[in-house]
Length: 126
Image (spheres, one colour):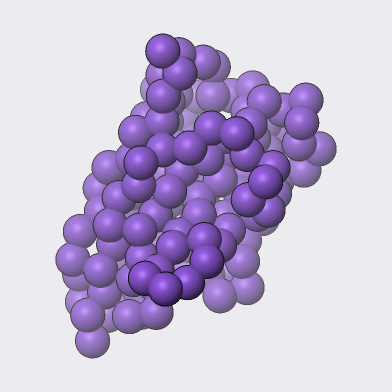
């Protein structure tokens, strides 16, 4: 069964760090472009960070220098390390994936991806 399961969300204070994880099953994640998206209440889902099968990465301007996307191919897991968190980072964070044949570069565009997790909530208080 093809599945993405996010974990690691929680409630933190502004300035704190947090790492969220996405465990992939039913497919070999190393052959996929993967990404993190987030959606705050009343807002559209936006791309935060993406990683191509070859390891190239891309970040939204709002998180550049604060967030790091990485993958552990042996564990079939995607990570998002978040630091210097701000209240504006509060959102549901979703993991997404698509086979590398459909993504030539790391993408933050939602329609690129056809596999999605259920999300993990991150809340940052001031």
